[in-house]
Image (cartoon, rainbow, N blue to C red; front, top):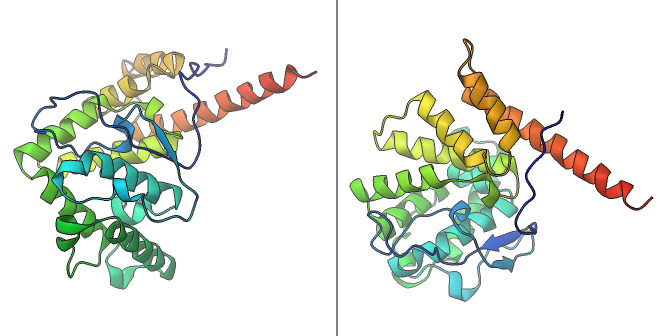
Length: 251
């Protein structure tokens, strides 16, 4: 029997920026400022055409006070233009990049710089690498050390598939948070990664999650990588079933 994806609570629109403020007013270590990704917002939607690199003026980063609005909006702009990996992926050093990678990195840098004003823009003087630009802005707005660690942990344990348009996007952000925690010398066991991953999936994919949890108790448990690929396949199968079911209602 095919596992079905639980019905979504809201319709999703492609190429959108999720930008509403988070409802919690007191997040650990955030002091009203957060590096929360777009995945953390149950949001209003501002439609953005593909190839638009710049945000509306009210969403541009001026300083720490509006980081929580800017950050998810900037990530969405990068994502819908296929530039996310240039900032959050494992790009090689510039001298080892392909022409395509250099173009994407340059576009990402133009987007980040163009979406900053005032004090935030002044932080980017002399910086051309988009990864360095984003990390520098994050450190400027959020801080480093214990504050950044607390906010990253908060994001990690609250990540949900329902906040993403596709499973690959969810997988990318999950890996980004794991990488960020490791960079801060926070040990995360493979078992904990899998537990958090399944918790993030259980609302939308209850049957699939139950099967994976059973497999984790077996002698040969799945790897996180295999679980991620299996979820992509599960989502594709579920979408196919949904489309067939919808088509049949017209006959």
